[in-house]
Image (tube, rainbow, N blue to C red; front, side, top):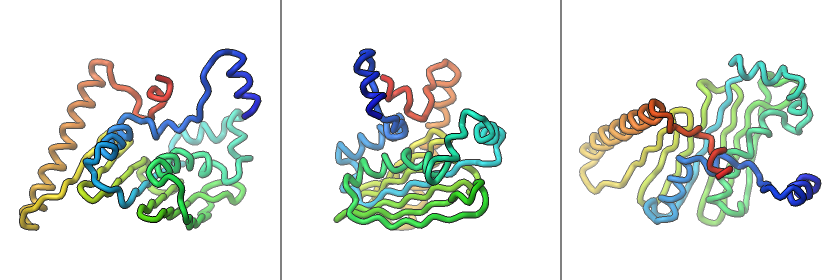
Length: 213
């Protein structure tokens, strides 16, 4: 790291940690809702991150000699994935007071490396749950932020973000309204994403472009 910093300074370029998911457009929209107080006080963040080990692309990566370093990283591929999710959790939890984690091995990774991770992080008044899996299908990454006024759901593979607000109406009516509202939000996201893709303005959802900007 010291050598990278020295080289960046000598070359007059910028260097940063690639916590790209924290700067993904959808996550930035969710962060804005939190900063503007629209969610209320954040009480819990739930992140589920899974990776398809059976896909051709994954197999090509793991069998590539240039990616041999993954086998030497403590925790292997699972720990290489973890910072993307943890960076988002730490943004909201700041400094966790307690961390409880459980790793599991189902034989997916070579050398007995773990392929499942569950963790609970907590501060005085906020909790976070993290699930990282190399076995859960389908793969993807979802983030749920629960607040005292509203909940937010970000789905990375589908490039969608939906909100669920508190409504002071009878429960049966509220459930029907929520179903309609969720369906409308998903259809709206799908239409907007399709339009952006068609006109060539669709940015990758992973946040790398935002980090560079």
